[in-house]
Length: 426
Ligand code: LMR
Image (tube, rainbow, N blue to C red):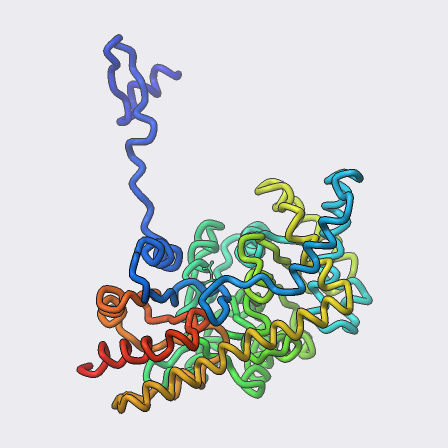
């Protein structure tokens, strides 16, 4: 049987000893470059002192450096003083994991929510937002085989990979209007209406990635109502809570509207950006259920999926996040620090727009301040993005998305000049 396989396969060759052997990996071609991480790679390889990285959506301070929040420093100090290893890694892992979930869901539903009191959610810790989405995609395929997922056009590039790898076919629905650089609300509503009843939708509850365009509260209410009528399932990827308005509760308002309307929902959360813990991969997945019994069943299924994929995530980051969220003083400090980060980005939006207007750019730059969160969907063409990179050492994704966290008071006028240079002749 094995010989037969050897003779049949096209990846066979004869060794000098005359044996048949497989050319195991000759058919593997390089994977296409990731549109976001490849920008970081190119930026790091650039030796120019004036280079600017507007690629990855991770927070930076006004010197362009990654930030370790004060609340994280304090949590680190507390962890260092504890003998966690003495009581065994396993018990630490499950206890802090439950704490993390318990605290994370308060950020989604509100700290006094009945959902939490009644245990009506299935929550598991996840490897940041990506891991939470991946777990859900797998869960969706297992329990709704053949279902598809509707994604905003455009959406975060990795969403496509995540649902593709879970073998869930993707559809898009209209979201962004390139002319207004805002929301195409009527088209969005049409697509939601025309989707088959009971479809899965992937929504960004705040600070949409990549466009920075969010529906208004009134528009969310209309969307939520239509979801209820159509019996669609909304899955929220909340990767930037706090960055749209500076207020964690306000940024969760869209989700709470859906819940008030009686929709069941799923939600991925990430602490990569709002706690500056990108490398720690801390996140949470929760699915809102009809009752505690259903929640227990779904939780056990999610745990089983995670167990086969990676068993359990590393414990250090969870200790940090659960430590911060469960201590009122540390949480208050974090809430303040989120505001500071959101305000810094907002003020740089204003400065960038003003600087472009002062250069007498004939283009309209209002969208820089109309859009919210970490990203500005600039409207720059791939050619203009390429000229910014080659001529000015300014890096962003080819779709013209700028991570505003990379803009500083020191580089904003250089950036405005460069944008003006590449856009002034169209
Ligand atoms: C981004 O969109 O840049 C962030 O979500 C970071 C990432 O991992 O892609």
